[in-house]
Image 1 (cartoon, rainbow, N blue to C red):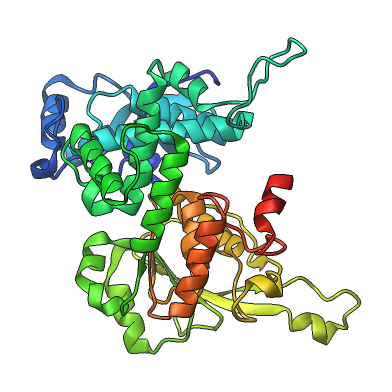
Image 2: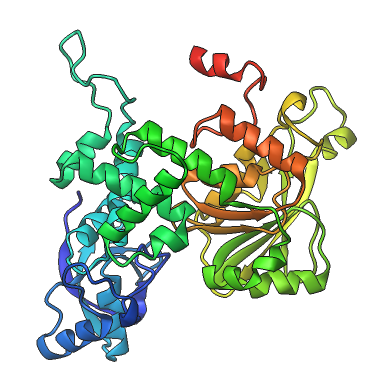
Length: 431
């Protein structure tokens, strides 16, 4: 990790991006009963009486005189509401890498005692994913000690548990809870304690006819498969769930068919205060910005034929949402999925939806609303990324195709490029 310095910085110079902690504890009625939970007002009172004992953590930003907040969102908000002009900080240099910044944020937050059990679980899962992305993931069943006497340096969940100083069983339960909370936000996500959430998870597995005694990854995959067929896909008009959608507060809506202005207003009305609206396949009305995607260029094709490979889509910002991956090209390059796996010529591949989701929102915080689920590829893309999503369609043909992909692939491996759906199991084994 890079070296840090200490000092005081004006609050107005600190940039707060999409934070891991989205609820700073103001809603004390919903504060969990498990352990000692310091409410936001208690934190403000403590800071007012005793000062800021633990400085927040920032990194020097590329913009002169600016700093990115890495950790300490609740403390930052408390001091801001108390009218402070400056705040004590641990300051990391500008060359701090994204990996290091994420590690600093996660470790600092995991170490604090005022996190809810779900915040703590999500932080641990994020850390596990981050370390695996940085070091490469050790495949399940592979021994770290190679036959030639060397050690495989790739990272496993067991390594993360050891790094955190917890039992692997605890981390496995956290992973299961986070997966379940994204699919069952009402039942699992709003449980008052970790024990209650685990109890609800066991009940859901029992109702689905799944074993409840073990938390093996294969069983979690089975749970996801059952849930994907019954929870994210709604066989109704989206308007029938308008009130529930308002409560859910989606931060990304993907519209895959032309809609009238009145319907667009209705769709926007159910979104959260910070969201993105994406209209695929058409240039939307005023207030939207255009982007293009392109199919694979035709080899040897003439310029006018090449132009036919481009398709427009449009996006619009709601509130003060922040784009997740800055600097992405306005062109999203993709190829058509094979004819034998798509229902329609204009069907968009799962991989394109994944790229869209990752560019506009952080998958771990994503709440994706699909008024028209179409072939379900956007739902499967969200599942691959660990994002929560709801799609609406009464088309049985689309639903059957969606279920077929769920049955053939494993969660996290859904794809529009299997080669052949009939031979895909053998092809996956060959890989």
